Image (cartoon, rainbow, N blue to C red; front, side):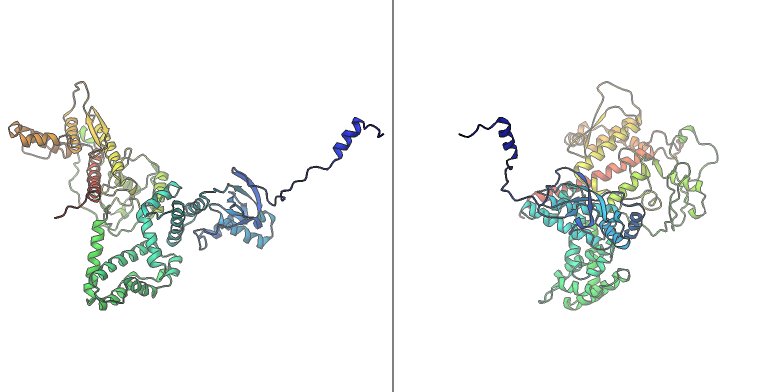
Length: 581
């Protein structure tokens, strides 16, 4: 009979038994963090992003290398890791820094270049490729100038990813919307130029494009290709010659250094190759192309006023205000439109903004004179810092747009500046970001509010979805107002369309017409806009007229409203089926 086992022995035997064996294969790699996590990685563990839009050397490479060698990495590069990959990859920006670290480690053997801090960000299972590519586009644009063709190829790759995500073809407008939603705003028109450059120019002059052929030259080439193709389609009656092949064959002859490329020589060679198949002379082809280019310019939605050639050195700053001084111009000085009396002006005249009366040779002006001159162009100051202006210009430049600069344009076109919620520096130019019906209505309504406030008129301006964007509501109680305020309200109501029904009633019922109404309004309108000119029984007077700032806003309303109606005419025509004649 076996001796009984004590409790102590039983517990000992249980504790000495081997553990459970797992049948699963041992893990070869730990799972990645699910949130942003700082890491220390080595050069052997990190790879560059293979679809990095930048394929040429960063122009700031040596500058960045010098900084890293002296200070190390100031900003840890963001990394990620695709599912199933052993090594990490640069997520959005940092490929140049990674290449510099490898180069410095090879040169020095210093461990601080081999092992470095990174910021790990989890891989997005659904949209990882798109987010990485768009992130690289944005990072490269902000920290190092991408060449036009590099951005274009990156946009084209993004289009491929978006189409795979959507399962269908993505239009350029939809591509613009998706890129903006992912943090890379770019206009449809700029996308169109990029894709055209890839399709029509890249096969012929890849070296010149990647060597830095500028955007203005690329736009000229694309415009010439478009107008030449239209001329070819109109006049070519033969067979066997395709225009695109002809265009690229001629363009390929100019492959080389972009600094040596001469657009006029290429145009001459292209016309020379076109004239024989078309059966036209050189001048005939040139005239046809020129007419096509003029038609393209006329059909451009936003008209930019031409700038005369000027020489603009670095703009000096005012020591007191910090405001930039108007740059010098090669234009001759203008004559004064009126002479300034030596006597003191009346009190009401002193309330008006300073007006420029002469345009002297700016090269002979003192700093004080220059500041006085630029102040003369300011109807009301735009209270925004130079840094904000610079940032807006840089963001617009990323989208291929050059915003008008008040100081640079002070001697050309319409030199004016008016502050407010939407500061104005050019009466005609319309920024792309507001070139939609909704945005135009909002800007018009806001400026109507500011005009109403400028004349001290009672009542309220309300934004509306129709018309030109606003309607006026009179105050409920009776309030005494000046004649200027009364005429301003009448004018704004007329612009908003509130009086259109009254005109219709007067047409239907002529006997109800008040014969004096037209004359009263005309007189008030003249005084409102111009003031009182010299007359036999009247001395010149500027009391009761709109201030310069309010007048600028009024002009801007007219400009935006005309553009709004143009947009709606186009939209109406697109959605209205053509009637059979």
